[in-house]
Length: 168
Image (tube, rainbow, N blue to C red):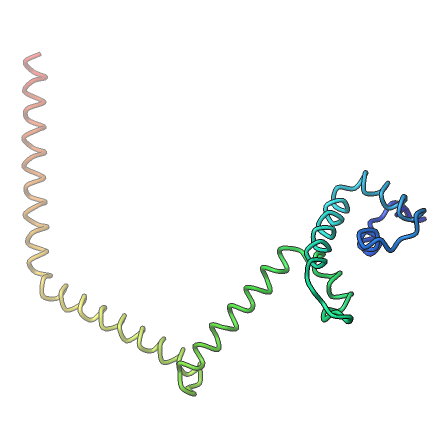
């Protein structure tokens, strides 16, 4: 597994070792590398498990899966699988929405939805404005009475504290 540029992992040789297709000298070299490289050892163990599972299947003389595709399956990263699954879900949702719109242009549907939302918001603003216009005088009176009461309470507290200060 060591090359002139330094030690490198070679998944193809790991697969060939698991399939028993390497000559003995190269097999020992790959096994030595597996002792030093946990990622290649994990790949080797996964390939052995996959080979055991596929060995239990009854397949005719010509297998239905191409050897290169079968070898590429265990090397895909989990992140790539998640991204492909996410893309599939997004496409499924897009197709479902397109089918539910019965031929309506999705862009027009989105614009109509935004327009309806804006109408709702502006209607709420008009209701709030009408309420404030109607309740405005009563709110001003309530605020004025509250201010006068606050001044009275402050005056009583001030006078009581001054009286206690004189008595002390």
